[in-house]
Amino acid sequence: MTSEPEDTALVDHPLDVLTEAGLTRPPTPLDRVRTVLHRYPALSPAVVLIISMIVFGLLNDRFLSTANLSLVVQQVAVIGALAIGQTLIVLTAGIDLSVGAAMILSTLVAAGVATDHGWPGPLALFAALVIGVATGVINGVLVTRLNLPPFIVTLGTLNVFTAVALLYSDAATTRGVDMPDLLTWTGNSFDVAGAQITYGVVLMILLYVAVAFALSQTSWGRHVYAVGDDAESARLSGIHVTRVILSVYVTAGALFAAAGWILMGRVNAASPNAGVDANLDSITAVVIGGTSLFGGRGALWGSLIGALIVGVFRNGLSLAGLDVLYQTLAVGVLVIIAVSVDQWIRKVRA
Amino acid sequence: MSTPILEARGLVKTFGHVVGLAGVDLELHAGEVLAIIGDNGAGKSTLIKCLSGAYTPDAGQILIEGQPVEFDRPDDARRAGIETVYQTLAVSPALDIASNLFLGREQRLPGVRGSVLRMLDKKGMRDRARQQVEDLGITTLQSMTQAVENLSGGQRQAVAVARAAAFGSKVVILDEPSAALGVRESAQVLQLVRDLRDQGMPVILISHDMPQVFEVADRIQVQRLGRRAAVITPKTHTPQEAVAIMTGAMVVA
Image (cartoon, rainbow over all chains, first blue to last red; front, side):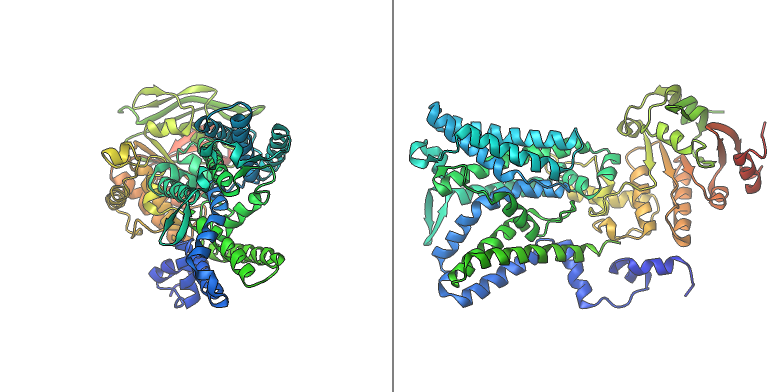
């Protein structure tokens, strides 16, 4: 073997290059695991979900009952829907701290125009969508035109949206019975083999299917990944980076309004106090779902799995009779583990 | 002599008080490798950025096949057939080779799936990517579905060059292609440059690496202090003389 200087540099290269160059130590099983996880980011959360379901099932017979599992899914629907928009934003290497506030603002406006001004259900729902899109436009313009970090922008708009929502609603809750039926329609359910499925859950799954399709099958989706992966490279490749980022925030805003519709059905009200934890919970779901906070890496379905993991932990631990604080503790530990795994996986990078 | 494929006349570019280009000419002919050398601040990068549309020159003209063109953005230059391989390569590490080749100009499926659902023609792009890589005689890239981050530096360079040479481009500009590469990988890049020229693709090569320049270039344009100091060839001048022109120790009429 020659002593060319690049031989040492090759040590850091991933396995297949080393194998091709005939320079490798045999890949350890751990290396193989890492390479597979690197390629399929949703795999590790899926494994965690299945294992945790088995464990909680063994701890308590009721956990795996159809009734309980459908309850978990219903509890997860709002965060799961929010996590779609959050995933899009995180894929561009951004973050949105204002998702819950944007969602609540849209629900309060829908309830407000319906009860105070007598707008019919579809129009009120449309108003919520407009508000959701508007919040996305505000965040997106601030991030792309003023070049402010998304963390700071959305920290600011979190407060702005929350304050506007409280001012608009006088901090009052509108009960479901006072609103048009359409606004709480997502809380209605139908029966599938003993499981209660709400229309909100169906809506969430449809949104996942639509956005997952756009991400994996269209150039827009590919550009979202490219922009998050390396924005400068994407720009030099002819991608309109600011346009892609703006489109992501606007799409996410529309998705947050949809999450708001699911929320109104779930709590049968439009309340400024609902979903206060939603901002951080949506980030938790995305992170546990294997999407990298550094952008450009992750799978949308992972975020649904991430939301389900949080739901399963909360439900399973409470069925096991543990204090609610232990649920919070467990979720916190999960987040840190998920980010550590992400860091470890990313070391595959040459 | 025939009309140059790419020509620049009297390009001027200033940045406040700093003069990047003080009236630079350049001619690139079909099937040749033109190297541009010069000390730091001699205007190499500024010249290239004007040609690739990243900068708009304050004065002067750029002509492609004798026709004047104006570039406001890199996209304009690309559409006119000038492709640039940047020092950073501008590849997306997490995407695979085929996706990188088609990044920013993805092809959609025919029919309703493409026009209404806007679905990508993934298989078609993979096949065309493979064809492109084969046509260029690149043997270092195996599977088009490999993520670029799993490739070596030389392979990444090959991806960037394959992308630049595809899609009906007329000129390929390589900016310091071997700056970050080892000895063997630099040799691969040199071979790529030769392969491009052998297929009639004119190449502009910006490099600090004097042996590399003298090995592969047909003509060498020496930049000094924002001007074209000389155009020499490896046959008429030695690397030592080129360095002397670069530093101003020698003046060529």
